[in-house]
Length: 294
Image 1: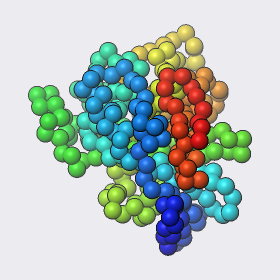
Image 2: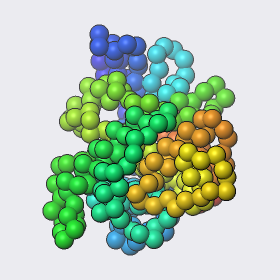
Image 3: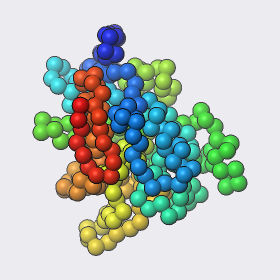
């Protein structure tokens, strides 16, 4: 059952037998990132050709959902981002990467993806699944001579991001596979999502990173898997997704600077405010961490 009050709020009760837990999913009308920032696009030092796509995606609509299992305040939230073509996907990886010396680096991105070793981290299954889908998208739609000019614009991935907010207001991005969540969203958004497998958690994290420069300043970050704070590595297009997962896993275990912590992005707080109250807050996604205001 779907209620459609004047504020555009939808409550979708999902009590199908296939679900382990009954959820009430609350959503609002789709919203654009630039609606939250009052037209401002977070500044990124990117190639002008990439900037056009980066700015365009900021104008595409997002869906945000609040999940509750009873009468309590929502504690879990899901962002469903815009549809990304292969070129869009490559562009966001580049935008999120601190080291842009090698540009889009598409051939190396494909080659390194094919030869990347298996991961062994808390989010390893989600990371592997996300990387493989991105690799397939890029390798299918890119050629050295034609670049992305012949890409199939119906071959897409959709960023998805789930996070939990505890009683203290701290946020934790969920890194485990969102199998049931993807199935549920395909159920409530049948006209927008053709295949649950199109939803990509890794690109959800990259989308957040690309538009949260104040909280993805990873230009001097510890090499994943090494305890020594003296070992650094370059974070470019080819390994930015892996590094984003590593930073989130690190934050779950030990505090890290706010400039490295995506979970402190005002975008998450702004989306929570919008879906729970219907009020469109004003958020600042500039290079200096700032709070949300309404």
